[in-house]
Amino acid sequence: MRKQRRYISNKWTKTVALQMNPQLRSYIPETRKMNRDSLLAMLQIHGMVYVKPSCGSLGEGVMRVQKLQADPPAEMNRSRQGRWRFQTGTTVRAFASYQHMYEAISKYTRGRSYLVQQGIRMLKHQGRPFDLRVMVQTNPAGVWEVTGIAARIAHRGKVVTNGSQGGTIHELDELEPFKAAPEFIERLQAALQEIGLRSARQMRRSYPAIREVGLDIALSSDFKPWILELNTKPDPRPFTMLKDKQPLNTIIAYGKALGRTYNLRATKARAGYLEKLPQTSSNPAAERNTVPDLQSRQPSVSATEGSQYAANDCLIADDVSPADR
Image (cartoon, rainbow, N blue to C red; front, side, top):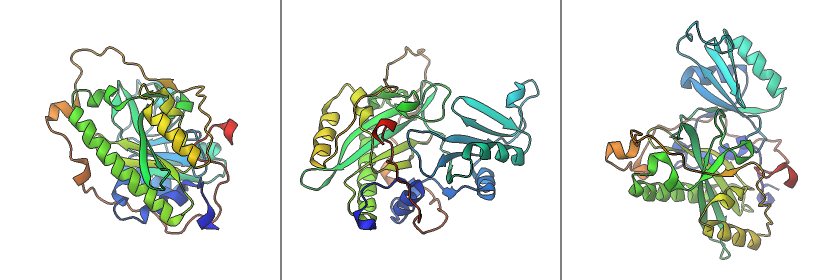
């Protein structure tokens, strides 16, 4: 049965499958099944984590949870006082104790299965965090190929980058950290291609029917790539927003060969635009005068709890629109 499955929606199942590849483990944030104890333990280790539904899409239900090192100033808005806090959408709630915060989070999760993932402090474009969607498909010859890379920038005040949550789509060379370092973009694209192809091949080892995947990859402040999520029925609509239409044309052609028909109508995502920045704006890559060697990095391995596939997987697709479900 598992060999016949083409679409895997359970995030825990996919995380475990990727963790089986030793060369991918260092790019996967520490992830655990969420309960009262695991959330507290992860906050003690990382300070900031993301809580997300095991079965979900479009960035719905994702929360950022934090434990501050010190109490905020007394003059701060009362709703934001307290060392324990979480954000959903644009709403931030703060609590004096972990117990009270967990009870409030439980009202959102309502007994459903959730994961807690190590928080990555992502690079930002004009003050907004961004991640990178990497599309990987088998071409008509059956060979894995990276067919597109697009940047997704979070809506102001939100913690997710999904276009369905108001995010904007950009070309890589439009992003603030990369503008003055075109040689870095070439290095980055090579690293993303390697991670994308390795991830696709690994998923196919566990699920041979898989023919396309979409990875959401964040870059931390030290330019290290992190695989936030992998989708087995990826949404190509971010690529409709790019000026360069070649990736979209390739994605559609390969998808057609795979028997997929895409809904390309984007209702909330927007094409990115460039705001005029002050001349004093700094560029991290340019300041260092070096290009980070992404492919040679050997960061510490993040351990993932458990080794068994989820017995009860989700039935909905990964990140297709509600109309497509």
